[in-house]
Image (cartoon, rainbow, N blue to C red):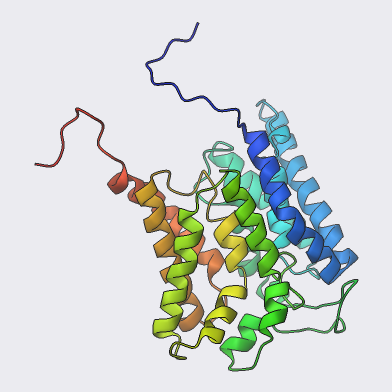
Length: 312
């Protein structure tokens, strides 16, 4: 018998059931991405999931570790990588990103629960740095496409350049961007599903979005223009990042106060990157940078154990 000191916390949740719920929550945005960008998006989603699961299985086999692909964490990573790339990205580059995420970011640091940054975002940033031109070359031609397959700027890039954007299209998703980031409404619905199932806490995504909104109103140069605010919130990878990547168990704080601080920092950094940086986007780098701050955040927000002293 394994005997431990009470209290004991029991839960029917496993890594597999949690990851299954994440896949379910991402399904609407994934299906819309296929509708929006066509068969190219479907191929990249299949490749992303397959390569990540295969990379994990092969690495663990040769390292004589327990094969853990059935916990579905690699499948979630593969899907998130696919949703974070343009539908026109060369599949070879996608494969490189998937292998980098699983082998370098995840497995070399000990596997699930040990990685210091979100593997999918690590892969996205690696691809952005390595293949900047290709990763920002967006085309749009889906089953329900409304304009042809020509290079198109994302709404955020157009917004940063002072051009008019279609807020309705940004909210619904009929616009250029990465495969899974375009439909704000479907990502929000997926996030609500995860919160309702208690898979994630509301603290990080809500603090993240609200803080970015306040930052945009104060420093966006448009005053209290609610339309501009809505365009900033619906554009880019904010909703995908806030609900599905910033809330990653391994790379986000576990303390309630820490989650609030984490979300606020994410909002501030994203606002700085978007409004004052060279790129129109900033979600990926903001999350990765804050991932590195998690140990420090948890150090100052972990409550003192009962009976172990206190404030003097």
